[in-house]
Image 1 (cartoon, rainbow, N blue to C red):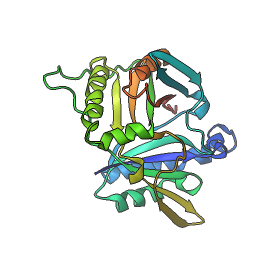
Image 2: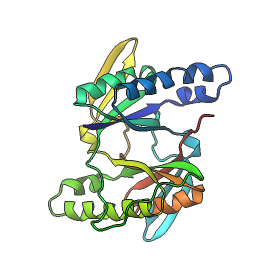
Image 3: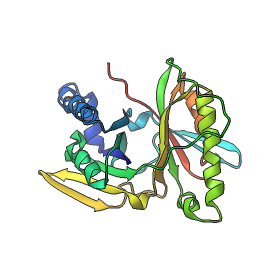
Image 4: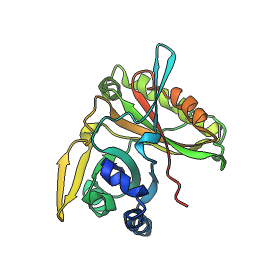
Length: 250
């Protein structure tokens, strides 16, 4: 089963990335962790996101696109990156979350992945993503009403029907590099590692009105292009879409 390990880091922890005296020590454990995931055959995908101040948020209200600089989530810790892993059960996912370098100072939220979004039947094969431009992660924060629509028998079919055309359009435009819908926030488990002790509690970490419901990773030539696609996201009219550049370490 696929689980997303969502890494929420404090401003102090994120600041280490660019501190000339501390950044080498900050980055040193990450390649070994990614290699361990790959060697164990559980790695599906992952991305490190640039700092929260690089984010742009998009809302679509009454057909009008509202864009503002800065991240959406108003919490002490911000989403810094994620890994998608394929493991047998939640306990195995928790074990891998505990091994994450950020677990000692940050919070790892573990959320099951929804079944993949299938393109409409009879569509042309997906185009490969362009190698030009930057990768952007489109983070989808859904309202409680949107989440409720997933399981409401009278609304779930309409909710599910919104997503395949959007995913298909991204594929046909050659922009799709990855993506996943996440299960309801109530399915989440949050983990901290403090003084060598594993602290686990049920429920999501982020305490905002909207919760992270999924993401797409796209290869776009500019932020403007990424924002255009964010505005086309099915829940842009009811939730908030955060667009963040993926971190490229050279």
